Image 1 (cartoon, rainbow, N blue to C red):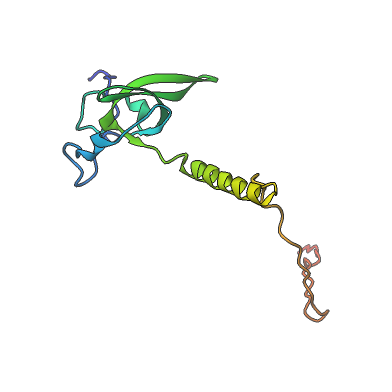
Image 2 (spheres, rainbow, N blue to C red):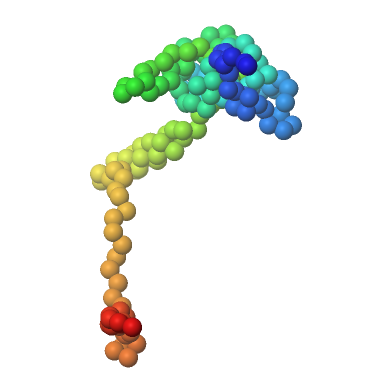
Length: 162
């Protein structure tokens, strides 16, 4: 019989495996990316780099940079424990991080709204930048002659005593 091993990297056989033709060390462009405090980053563990590797729970999570070091970043990630959310602060090597695209559409919308406000101010109007829900569809009237209408009704129940 064997004992149950629960090491630091237990259960990561598929999670930390690299895809076909992506094995080996990461390219230099991975290390050239610039990160600033407040940036959103995705934690994606690269198993070929063991230094500064986060725990397997954080693989695939998105966090916010709170500290920048020489070759590591401090990332703040939320973790649900019981009935509450804790903000966990971990330091992760740059090889295990990539810039997140989670707030791209938000930043784009902010830019567009600011431009709308500037244009409206020049024209002396007030820009409406609040998003509105789509709402219900418009009404339609279906016209049909009495010949086209077929009334579907269930057959009358007839009790059989054989």
